[in-house]
Image 1 (spheres, rainbow, N blue to C red):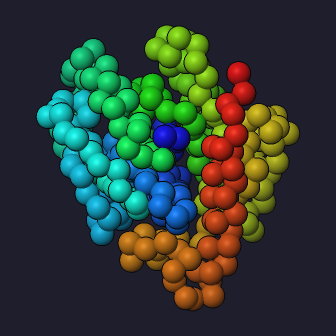
Image 2 (image 1 turned 30 degrees about the vertical axis):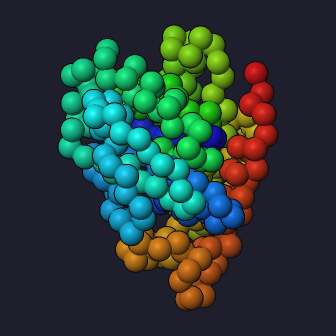
Length: 254
């Protein structure tokens, strides 16, 4: 099973939009079994994927009960719930328990997409502990760029202290909700690319488009909406998702 965490320590950057569309995209592969774990108690991913197969609550990974999950073709969802707030109070037992239960799922699914809360804590730590890859959508306002280095430090912390040095494949910062006619955002994007290069930046952008909001509202992939504006968004997003999938198929560079 290939696992990817969609992570950013800030809300409103299109994290859930990317996570659910990645799950839909991966599930298009013939027979692919895709597990989605929603670790954000706000439950936006759970709401959007309400029509998909639900196998229980994501808090059960931390607290039980132990349940056997059958990997079936398509999307299987572990829904967010309020008990996730308790992870912080029981972090020393809940996180190792989550890692153990997660490992038992690896033979049941081909892919796992984990949507995370926008604050650092036990749930984000657990997600990084078990993942193979991380993608981080960001917006390009000045105040949002201040936290760019924080995620890299957190990834390194988990690699060194909890994974025994085992690398996480960092797929990069994905500029999201880009306002294409904003000189300030374009300048910020240029600065990020020049400073970080290919090791920091994901090769692709997601622009601000109404089609994405409509897709989340209708709980369906943007490429299923027939409006021309939505189809423009679909072409853009599918290109990004195809790149993510290709990167997940490649070996993680040590």
